[in-house]
Length: 345
Image (cartoon, rainbow, N blue to C red; front, side):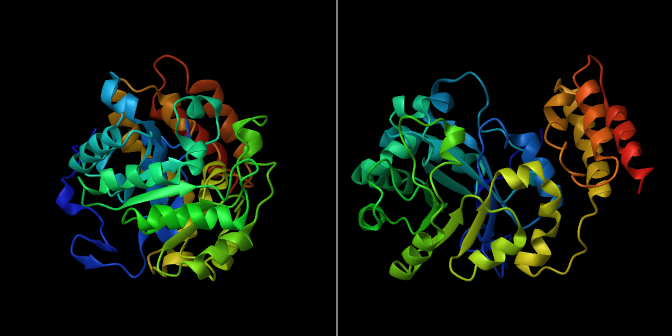
């Protein structure tokens, strides 16, 4: 694990290491996904895109304060990087936000979108949409102790509270009672009971126009859209109406799309990262992690989809799935799997 950088090098207002960025990192981001966007996943995604904003999995305040693991661990190469926090107690959130800034995170994001029962029982996630004043208190408590941006990821509504007026009231309350000016809007409402988290990502209908209207009514805010976006062409369309696009499952399951983000969405001129070269670039990281006791399968599970639609992709996935979990597996397993792709190119 590389040593985390110091807070003074963080991204603020589109500036990094003294250079002005043409676009803020939030123009394109990879969504926080529980059990998926861990530090190994993020390291790999960063090889593919230098510009995209990456998010951690949601981490609860309880885990950070009372847990035995190092829940704030990350690799220096992951920046720009946002920590997504789950919680509803302002003091606990402020404590965790301060720790995160000290560790060098570039942004803190409050989860007001997760609909799972476990999250609701902890009184955080999507159920907080019904407590806008509390969300504002949580955001302000964090803002009072950090200099990095504090943002909110939310839905467009919950249960029967799904009118546009409800969404506007929620945003207005948070904005007026804190200095929050950056929201990520998942363009579906959440059902707090009766649907699983998976069903909540698929069954409630998407309503992109509602998010577009929100940007018109709150032009001073930075608004990003999330939910059901499957291509960079779709992202370009959304960017005609909002400030940023967040993609989740498609970016994870088909990560090769990330190799085109910097050119297509940030107007960068650097060559597109070749997916084969991206895998080879991962070898030193794999060897470093294995030397510290990480299992190969914990890393390779995040790269299974990189060759989606390419001859040899099935063999690639099969070889990694069947061998990466075995005791003593090392980078040669990945090298062998890669040969199954390159020999068919």
